[in-house]
Length: 90
Image (cartoon, rainbow, N blue to C red; front, side, top):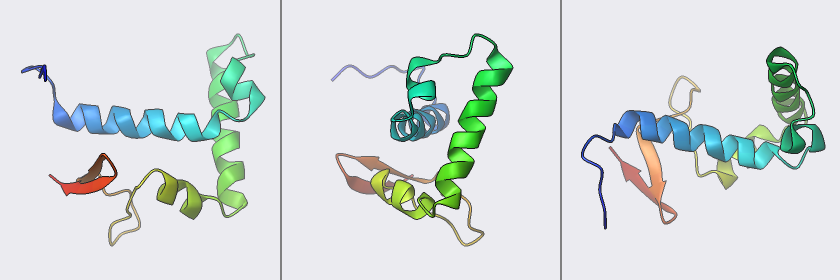
């Protein structure tokens, strides 16, 4: 196993979380194909899609599929992450 000594675990966890959220949202054509040429418009589509999913009460299901836990304040607990579907505390 090749391990990068310069890897920042905190940044990796956040990057992995963002990539997984986008993977869940990419079933929407505008997000998957990135039809907007202007960055601001694409960011707006991402925000509207995420809000649409939340309004459909899909957030709990999305967090469950991503194996994400919320902490006591209702925020995403970045200290818990998954390795092969096994929860690991940092």
